[in-house]
Length: 217
Ligand code: SAM
Image (cartoon, rainbow, N blue to C red):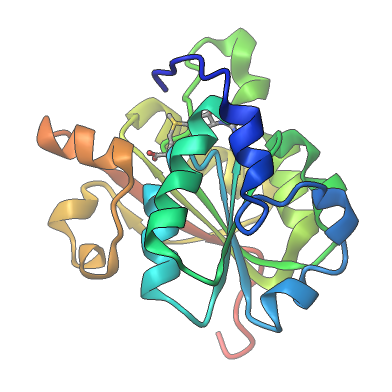
């Protein structure tokens, strides 16, 4: 993520408490008071917020929360929300590694992980957002019917993620090796990174991972 230092970012995030949760730990176990009973879908590493804002506008019956660790990046997401005015979207400035401080168990219905950094060097494996410790965090906050949806342009990271999700015990479905050429693209909302890779003609990989099989399967 290319990032310019924005000295005004912290103040901007504080001023926009209608979109930025200032103390997310205060809502742990109580997010339904904000979502008003709507299912909660989070995006980890939300970046500049294009995906999560479009999703919020497209699915008004879902409550979306984007989590991003760099405030200079998050301000662009918040500016986008201020312009688009969805009433079912919030942002958290924080590290996904602290997800269990933000959400109680079984509070989240879906986790989106879009184009997060592949960290190709083996010694950086623990930083990948599909590493086992991150999957354990998602597993903890997800409801029993919860799902993780992963999109990436990086074949190596995709293969790693499939193996990591499967090893953890998630059940994989709807795997696409070229999302934009597949029927799964009809419902697809593109992220900023996805648009850049698509312009270069690169295939997009995608998988949905279920915590458990639906009752009638
Ligand atoms: N999801 C966006 C997209 O597809 O356009 C942004 C992709 S960008 C490559 C990955 C983003 O994830 C960056 O903004 C980075 O700061 C964020 N990120 C990476 N690790 C994170 C973590 N542990 N906690 C929060 N955000 C993280």
